[in-house]
Length: 205
Image (tube, rainbow, N blue to C red):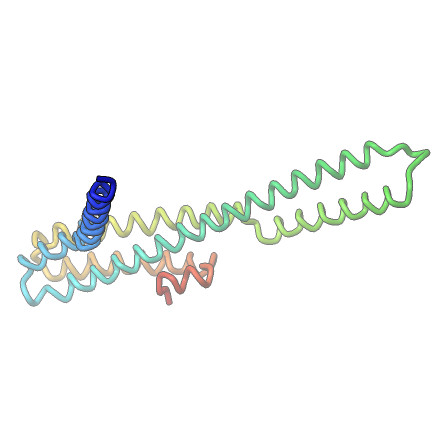
């Protein structure tokens, strides 16, 4: 009886695993909203306008890559900012405590040596914070993340309404406006920089 029950449970586990695997596979194969939008747009776009649609898609993809890269950079700088600030607070507190706790009459060489070391490390961490300024960089990455995402959404909306824009000259002007905004954002990105491994992750040139 026990083996039968175990066999039934084993079959149930296999069924659960298979169901979960099918669910994950189905989720991965499920098209994204952007893919559905692109497919619908292609059905109604004349062949002579298709290259404009592809240009908008490429620009939207680049915006999304930069947006994700700045989001990751913001998270990294946030982590380092917290580490540095906690270190500064801890060291400065310890330094103040040890210096104030010394009895001037009974102070030893070891006490003075400890004070010097704590003061040195406190100054060092403060200097690192001033040089790298993680909090300011975090804020810049946050703002660029929002700006790239706003541009991405504007392009997405244009693709959604692409078939309603019948004048070829209008399409050119719209795309040029987006491209100009994108260039301005990439200049800001160049000023702040993107962490190398994140840059490689999103294939940003």
